[in-house]
Image 1: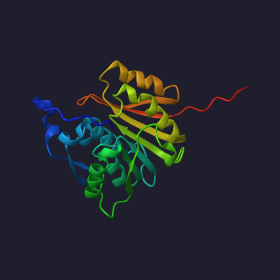
Image 2 (image 1 turned 135 degrees about the vertical axis):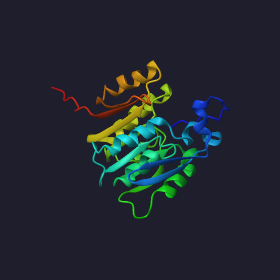
Image 3 (image 1 turned 90 degrees about the vertical axis):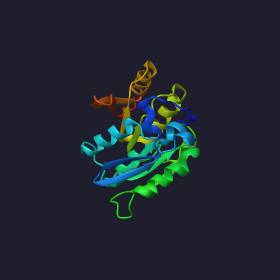
Image 4 (image 1 turned 180 degrees about the vertical axis):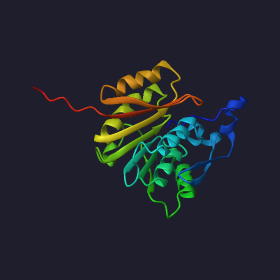
Length: 218
């Protein structure tokens, strides 16, 4: 997730982002996440897309037990934490400046007796991808990571690298601008894409994607 500097805003809608913590109940666990909008901006607050993604995971439509997952642009780490609590082995990633903050949230909310596990790792999309096994994950998770047009090409490159033919990608997002749908169009050049959930209250979509079979030259 991109790091955006803090800007004071008096809108009541944004007041929750200025709270120092956010509490949730997922996977039969109480989760308390530290937030720090002033220091890290959008990377350090919980967005609705992450909440809806966790709600979708709890529906049980995607198997998590003993699966290998990676979360992109993790921010506070909510989605990765919940996936681990539900039994996945999760690599939770973000850019370098957010890692200490992210690691603290993961350690504070993932008990030693959790069914799954989580590690925090640096990942800037499109860079250093050889540090991650190509096609090495059963599940790729991303909540509210589709919003900066400059990141679309490296994000697609990263997804293509991480996914095998059997990998499932889940993306939760709010469609704010035409450029957001432009990314979905880009994604469809490499992946089959299906809308699998819509949260009307929060106006958040969840998309499922999987790699299209490579065309063989005749």
